[in-house]
Image (cartoon, rainbow, N blue to C red):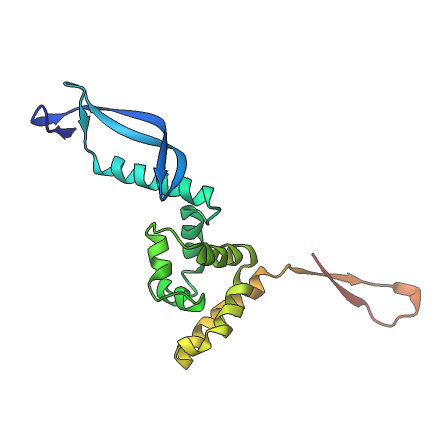
Length: 185
């Protein structure tokens, strides 16, 4: 139940979805918007969660139109690297301001330049982040740098394809011992 300012009481509402064209930041965007209508008088009822949904729909449409990294992809990056470094340290590693990555995780829209950095991280993984860490070494205390570097190195090694080992006994080939061969999977 939601409060209707026209009926001056809590009422049941019906949610309506509309595909709308909206101009935002000078761009014409098409996205789904949701509205709540009072079941008694039919007027619009304000619901905070629908307001948030509608804003995020506009932001997502803008990101898509401008070829910026999606909000959900930013959250995947945050989850992927949360055991390596805090959001603040990820910002520093990537050459951003200390709170920038955290803001993107809260839904802020990145600039094209920072979006491209995040897309490259998404594409190249921990190896890229390790490279960026080395480029921004001066942003960290020595012990902090070593801790992050170790975690990233472990991650890079786990991203490498497994090596398959094959034991071969050549029997009567004249080789005196079985040989091991390694193949990248």
